[in-house]
Length: 356
Ligand code: AMP
Ligand code: MG
Image (cartoon, rainbow, N blue to C red):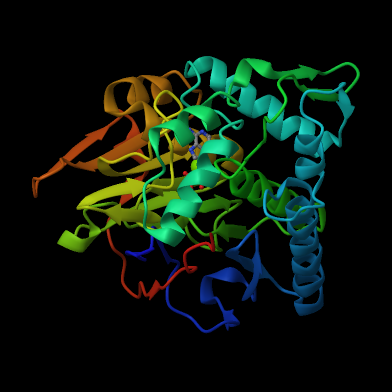
């Protein structure tokens, strides 16, 4: 596995880990970081009380850790894994969190004709092995895995709050939505503790609340697929989320072809066109899942999906295979969130690539 550029840079103004903000009436800036879900999660908080900030941060990380224990497809005893173990059996009662993630996922599957599909785990597993061994899965392996994939056989009963994986051998993987969901939950935890000026970043998924004091929004830098060519875009966001998906972090290159960790459920193949998709949305669950879905759908259907989603905007930067040109496509409203560089901006290298 090669590790390419980082998908997201956070630019949140100069300042030490804890700093006084002159415009902020004594509000201090606190920063916390812990690793969960195989990724560094970072919290930035403006508040005037250090104890309140660190207590709230502890609660936010605890919430993320709990969601990791619920949603992980690596931990054999996670709720998601235990549910997968019962595929082909009866409906299984699940926690509200797992139900919500699966309900949101299934809804997006319906809207994308299955381009986004959290039952993709059998295929994703083959590609994880391919990354380790640098050897492509065979067509028959892929077909066998695909025979156990299908969002329509993910049966949800909202009344009973049960889930049934109708076919034996089906398995779940919520890697395309879980970090956004966990970031939303962490921000909700901070708000519950009375902290409104906060940012939560889980690798390529960033959720922001009210802006830093005296600023119109949080300045977030996105490093798209053309970042190597020096292109840097800055967003100014408040009470919103942004996610970037792409092959920058996790891919395998075999015989000159680069396969992404995002898989097309129609073929079972890792995506090969190099691209990055950045989505701004009202919340992280939406931005995270849409960014993955649009990566699979490609520009035409992907942008239509974003336009069809309340409060969502998307930017796609694609490199045509064999060419050195970037194709840049965006929804008409995306530029509304762009902003220029500011005095004192200091790129904070984000958040290493997730383990996989
Ligand atoms: P992200 O980094 O948010 O784009 O999510 C990528 C992750 O989503 C992969 O590592 C897989 O765990 C999962 N995934 C891959 N392909 C799909 C797909 N077609 N639909 C839903 N999830 C997927
Ligand atoms: Mg995603």
